[in-house]
Amino acid sequence: MALSESLWQQAAQLEQAQQLLVQVAENLGSYQGQDWTDEISASRRSVQSAQLSINAGIEAHIEDDQCIHDWLLQSLANAAASSLVDGALVERIGRLLPDAVWIKRHAAPNEDADFVDRHRHALLIGKGSRIQCDSLTLGLMVMAPDVRYPFHHHPPREFYIVLSEGEWYQEGCGWFRPGPGGLVYNPQSILHAVQSGTGPFLALWGLMHT
Image 1 (tube, helix red, strand yellow):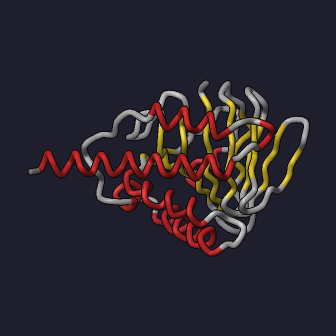
Image 2 (tube, rainbow, N blue to C red):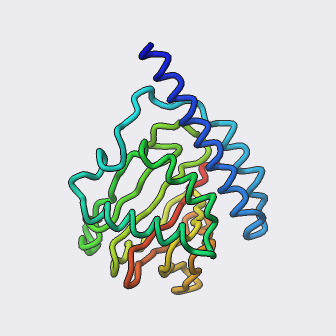
Image 3 (cartoon, rainbow, N blue to C red):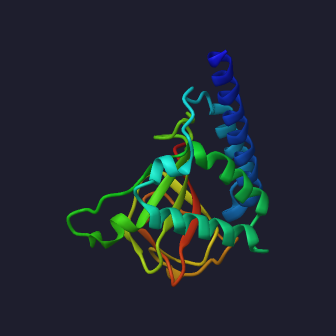
């Protein structure tokens, strides 16, 4: 009985992941001239399996980080209430959050460590998460007000679906504000950064590994 229930939970989790990827593809459309629908569809096909254990909820992951938890709930509520943000996308994110793996990035030797305890990433799909996907890592980033996530770069291409106010930096473009519902694309290995404003920050990000 317990095994059957676990398998049912696993199937339900994978279905939620599939539906979230559908919403991601719809939001990206043909942004930056790329066929995101085909790329995300490939990622949907590569979603393989989830762990059988289902965690109790968000609090079980970030119970020692009450402020982060509060900022998460506030920013999710703001996104859901915004006419500029895709409500279906926010709903799909919310359904996967209870089983997300929460991580934080540590500061490099040359970086201000102030950001470390004031941000978190919820890994939803792909590397480090409970749902395997070789072509895409999908996560939710939450930050406290007045935090700058350091300048950095990485080989995978990256997109953001913006769910709150915030500022992005991209090499060659400088700082800009896409606004809630906006999109950001970071080409391979380009220098970039992000910072929150006077309110909490929320964005869905994806790293494309192909």
